[in-house]
Length: 290
Ligand SMILES: Cc1cc2nc3c(=O)[nH]c(=O)nc-3n(C[C@H](O)[C@H](O)[C@H](O)COP(=O)(O)O)c2cc1C
Image (cartoon, helix red, strand yellow):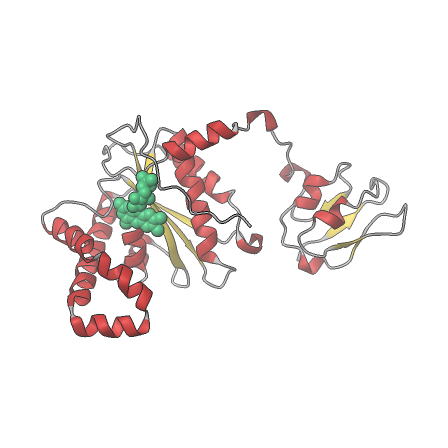
């Protein structure tokens, strides 16, 4: 549990900590009196109180002074620059074999680590795989798994049973049969449609007992994909690998995922052989204004 105290000498009684705390850790004091710490057990260690306290009056065991830094607001990109980044990010599928430098991978994970997490649990863990032998096994096992899925989905009995249990999942799975077979058949000919020749796979895993581990991992992935662009790298979300990890393929063990963890996302990363100098637009967003 975090130890939190308010230095009444430094406190300016602005009550910012009371208002900004996402939980109910602080309570307002009488006029001219510092707020009180009433429920430190509720603290999620988000650091908002220490970041916002203008006079550094809050002592928080999770945030010694060296963990609270000034923001470099002048470095923030403009709205246009951000929109251009979102447009520029595309899923690459043809990679050079050139490895991704370790310092770039550290930057990518730094970006991922800064994403929001449910209840600020920061439960996402990362595994970086660049070992060619392991990547090849991942490709092989994933492709084999997809081939089995396609075969099962082509079986009318299994398909109707699946339709009874999970009708929506069944419809989307059936739509993918052709793609699954294409990946599986390509692998038999030595063609990699799983990682598409990417020299690096970044795995996002977590203990399922933390709050919303899947959602937190997806947000981390988005940060990682975007920062890749700024590093001259490209990526794509390895949905097939993640799917295979969920279904007894022993890929998690091969990757070194702890037994009690689950794989929630994966990113193939590398230098794209093609530069996207143009961007093809998406469908307009369906919006309701009320
Ligand atoms: C959950 C999810 C799973 C995905 N799985 C794969 C995959 O296994 N292989 C692949 O090549 N692309 C995969 N993608 C990438 C999408 O196909 C891609 O984002 C989409 O076609 C839009 O293209 P863009 O990312 O270039 O804008 C996945 C994307 C998401 C969000």
